[in-house]
Image (cartoon, rainbow, N blue to C red; front, side, top):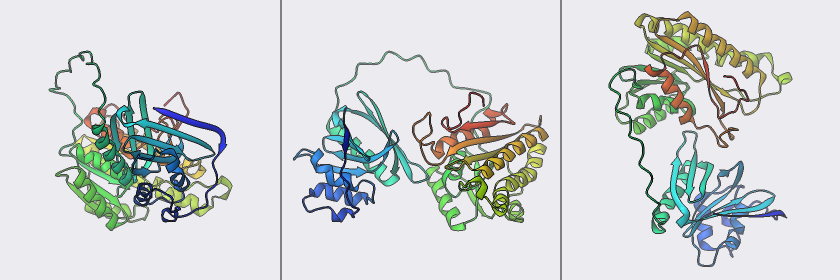
Length: 401
């Protein structure tokens, strides 16, 4: 791996232009890759400068504009190497020859931005905020080119410890025969949670306001999980009759996962009374109504899971913070109400949907939130109740839970 940095060397400012406005001197392979990537402002100057970084007989296969270590840049796959040109004041280039690539891991995200991890002979490069389309294209191109540039076989690893014997009894992460209601599940974290629960065997009910988006989300779950049992209920849970409409369609459930929306960040002194009311009407009251409606049936059957998934706005927002405190208090209070009945109630705290988590140095993906939720919804989490569990990548600076 080669990293070249030119400190103090400012890059010339290039006026905005479409990729097709790049001067005629631009090489055809660079021009075509840029057009496929449909670059906007980000990456255009770097694309115009790209030929200066390439040898005359080096061919460009694909480009993208991901983030690496907190900095956006132009990621270029050629027939010889992978090159990352950072966007910013100081010129910087990371270059990896294809024979140094030993593995590729691409992870699609429901929010449309994917993660590409490239394992090399000297370490790992992680690129985030790639579009799903270009993440898939770069992963496919890397795998194809790496096969044409094989590395020398690594020494045989030491024998691994024998795997434990298969579990023959006790609780399992298995939700077959259970129904799970997931609110806010037409996209993002809610959709990822519904998909994870379906993969664990649950019959899932997707709940959101927009029928068209719900239908598309249900199709995504069925595509991801063959044979998934998926139904949808279109209702606005913030409305006074929203919960009643859901109960008509789904009178009882074994698993309840409430994923309320996150309000935009606002200065504390600028938040009007109406915005305070709207924040509580869309987060706290629907959660309380749902818990009040579904917990009695869970208690009568002697088993149930109720979860509130609470996100964070991109910047601190006092009304959301107060609503979050109220949700945590409600979760704990209802957990106490059903104590000793086989029903658990917990809250899951996530970080902001965008930006790198401090201790991960990448965003927390919806599927990672879903993994914790599926565990908490399973029989394996029978002793976890009344808690607030974090899956925020270290977003909260605290040594205590």
